[in-house]
Image (cartoon, rainbow, N blue to C red):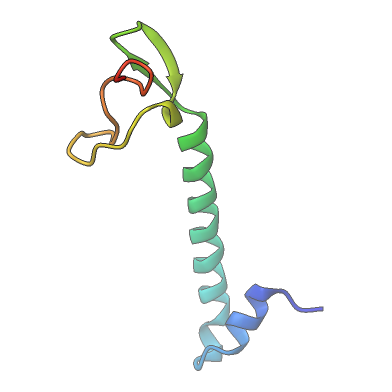
Length: 77
């Protein structure tokens, strides 16, 4: 049984570099998984209610360095 990764590598025109391609793909997948896990697990401090909350409790704000509003969703109501 072949994995999806093996199928991607097998269809690449340059078979000599297939192990490098596989390593790059694995690295990218692991990086994305780690980023998703850290985004979910990290906390952010809300100065209005003076509590630490998961980042999911904050609206997005691309103009801020962390990409989130300063106050949590509950305090912004």
